[in-house]
Length: 232
Image (cartoon, rainbow, N blue to C red; front, side, top):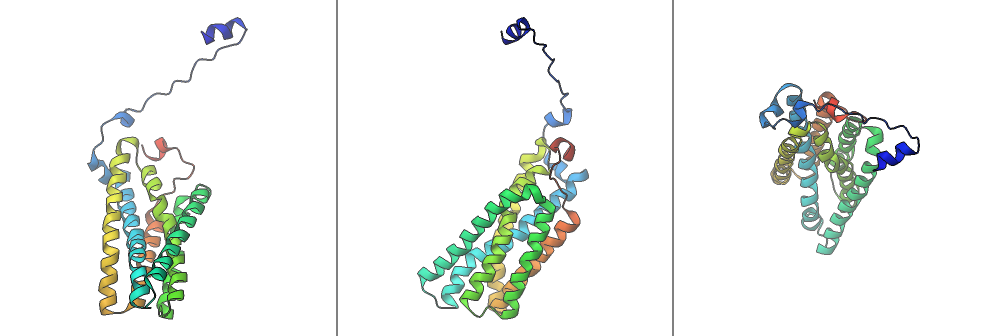
């Protein structure tokens, strides 16, 4: 055996460190615990973040190609190409987020991203979204900024819950992204029909502002913290 061989060569063996297993870590999950104690605030916060970011980004990414074609009368190829530009820049932003978020922290990143995304959306509202280039530049900036949140919310959701709740907590949260994704296009259709294009961006700016405020007031920082201590 390796131990006998090491002993013959005069090496001193150290006893392995035995860490006690927390009984809670091995207990059965109960979805009702998501709404108790410290997890109630976390659950409602992460639901709010899922809804806000996906309402905006899904609303943008599904609506913009149609707007390019129907409002600005671009060709189908050009409309789709502009949509691909928005998606591609979002991918690049997500990669940057993956490399940087562990250094910056979740709460600072999310609050800054939500609030920064307000600026190009308000700019589109103020300028009137009168040209396709104006929209593709400013809407892509907003989408890419917010894509860093939607890209990493699965990670953040998992960090907010202990092992016994991690799956159900993340699952419940991601269910709300479906609600946000469905609400975004509906919001676009309602506002465009009754108010006009520029006010769609104003509504999205308001949603991003709400997301930023929720993050600042309710989100917790998980960077550098041991999960067992963070989520007992």
